[in-house]
Structure formats: C-alpha cells, structure tokens
Length: 361
Image 1 (cartoon, rainbow, N blue to C red):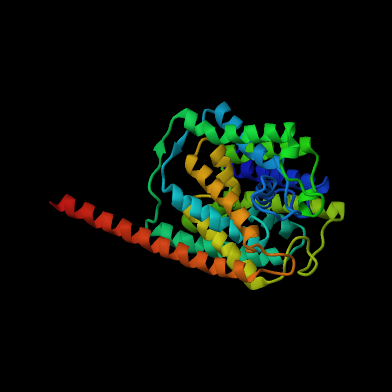
Image 2 (image 1 turned 135 degrees about the vertical axis):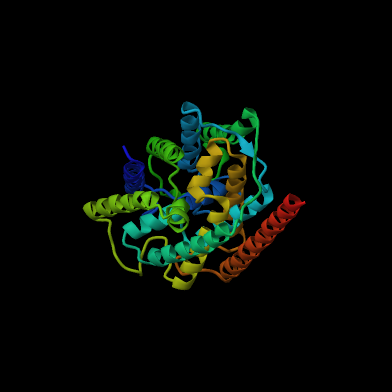
C-alpha cells in the first residue's frame, strides 16, 4: 500500500473518530482539538478559573499513551532532548495563544471547515501563509540546535506522568475542577474518548500525520501525500456532517467561533510559523512527546501554560471576537518569531563562514 493511500485512510479514520466524539457529546465542530483539550485540562488542574472550561479531557492522555504504546511496539521509542528547551517552551506558549485567539488548533480548523464554518477558511489562508513564511527561513538553513539521545527513563517521564494523571482523574475526580455548564461540560463518553485518543495517537505516531507537514512538504519538497490525507479527513467529516444534519454553511452563528477575519488570519499565521520552527503542529508535538521526545514535551508544557495564561490574562477570544490583549499578543508573537528566524539565520551564516575559513586554512 502506498504512503499516500495510508495517509488518506488515516485521515478518514481520524475524521470519523473526531466526528463520533462530537456527535456523542463533545462540543460542535470540536470532536478533537488539542488546543481546546489542553485548555480544559489546564482548567481541570485549576491553572485558570474559567469555570465553563474545566475538565481533564481523557483524549489528551489517549493521544500520548497511544503514541507511547505504538512507539514501543514498533521499536520507535527513541528518547531525545536538549534542543533549545526554553525557546521550544516559548514557541509552544505562543502557538497555543494563537490557537485560542482563533478558537481551535489546526485539526479543529479543518473540522470547522468540514462543518461549514467559513471563518476557518480565512484561518486556513493565514495558516498557509505562516507556514510559507517559516519555510522561507528553513530554505535559508534555519534550524534549532540538534537534540541529544537521552536515557529511556527520561523519555518515559512524560508518558508516565500522563498515565498517572489519567489514573488519578479516574480514581479521585473530585480533586480536579469540572465544569457544570459550557464547553467544558460537553463530553463524549469516557470509554469512547479514551479509545479515540489512543487510536488517533497511534495513527499519528505511525504515519507522522501533521497539519504543518501538510503545507511544509508542498513548499519544500513538492510532496502532496500529507495534503491528500488532510483532504480525505475533511471530506470524511464533511460527508458525515451532511448525513447527520450537522452541516451549516456560513460565517455567522457558527459554534465556538468568531467572525473577525483579520485576527482569524493573523492568529493562525502565528500558529503555522511557530509550528514550522518546532517541526510539527500541536497534535504532532503531543504525540512526539509520547514517543520519548523531551523537546516536544517542553512544547506541550508551553502549550499548557499558554492555555492557562490565555484565560488568566484575557487573551483568548470569545464568540464576540478577539480581545485587545489577544491582538497585542499575536502581533508581538509574529514579531518575535520573525526576529528569532533572523537571529538563527545570522548564526548559521557565521558558522558557515567560520567553517569555510577553517577549511581554506
């Protein structure tokens, strides 16, 4: 079976699972969303006080543990870390704020499009432009420092922490905050959530399915396999929504969305640009953390803190639109990632010149 077919089948399965999660209890057009789930988890751990957005989403733990088990089964558990951890943490933080100004991660962006939310098309345009901007830096040899091999014990810390939190949630749920109304109170059954999370995590680990990779592969290599996988996911959810009577095309009145096109565009541009530097979208980061990547674990922790900060400091959008704080943070974030790219390019150029001079001697 060709890689393209595998990615398309994977996209269909992920799409159907996301559709099932939404149909059986998760919020509309939010069957699977890493940003939204981490937002709820941060609330469940009482890192923010938005009472309608607090729940220890089992899907998040499923993503990590599904990837962990799949990596072990196929001998792809390779602990590594040490590549600019604070920069990765900061990029994860900014990427999460971008998601919450848009109101969704790249996966939810696609689910929103498949549900008829045309605001997400504007977000997609920004996402592609952000990835394109980051790809320009990659073509000029931008790269964060190389990571280093770590012990298996260190690589297992993050997935074991997730397993512990899941067990603690099941055993002592009263220790965690849990919304009684709002998006945090809209939940698919626990078993379905866990199974869907495990399956999606396992699929992403095996196929390297990634929404950043979808565009990056086209810009850098002219490869369309990942894009066809995402297209298959979108088509599967679109057909399912039509069959279930859940498709509602338009800009206004979409669930958990706003209509401010400028900030939908810019926020997802920031998400795409950060994702290029990090080497993957939020879903890909959390799955990589599950297979022993300590750098991806730092990104995930940055996203978790970003989710908490977004609600503690009024950065996240509402259905009424983005906040002033959110707009300022997006602009600052875009400037920072641009400056960061320039500094790393300067460093790469200096190293290349030093290497050439040494060689000539």
